[in-house]
Structures are given as C-alpha cells and as structure tokens.
Image (tube, rainbow, N blue to C red; front, side, top):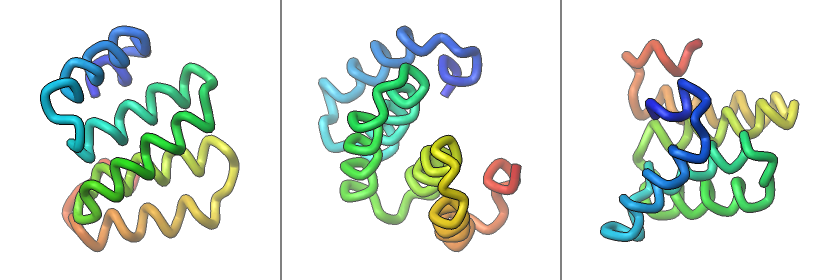
Length: 99
C-alpha cells in the first residue's frame, strides 16, 4: 500500500512478489499487485490478479475496494459502485472506501 500511495510501482510489484512467494494465495496481496499492474498499464494482467485475489478472499474489503478502483480507472462506474458497496458491506466503518 505504501509503495502504491507514493507511486513507486516497481518497488510495490517487488514487495508483492516477495509476499506471494511465501503465501501464493494471499488475496489482499494479489489484489494490490493487480492495482500496481494497472498503474503500469498492464490492464489484463491487473484484472487477472484482482479476480484471483477475490477468489482467494471473498470476505476482504480490501479486495473489493481494489476491484472498484480498477473499474473506476476504466470508467466503468456502475461496476465500480457495486464493488465499493460490497466492500462497505464487509467493513461499514471504513472511511477509505468512501473516498
């Protein structure tokens, strides 16, 4: 998350790969890797990783939030809203999702 927020995408990709080497099915890390890949204009790979992350951890608000961010970046606002709503169902007190 830190590397994504500071726009250090290549470092973020390396950090995600390190975590995934130890825990290959960690849903939130897969989703964040997808988000970083999206910023590096690797859209199809990004969607694959986020979907894989969601499959691994359907109850994670982070995965749903990242899915919404991906849809929003593609200007698919209807799907983005659905993803954000799902994230809020899981963690209704999280202000980050509302931003």
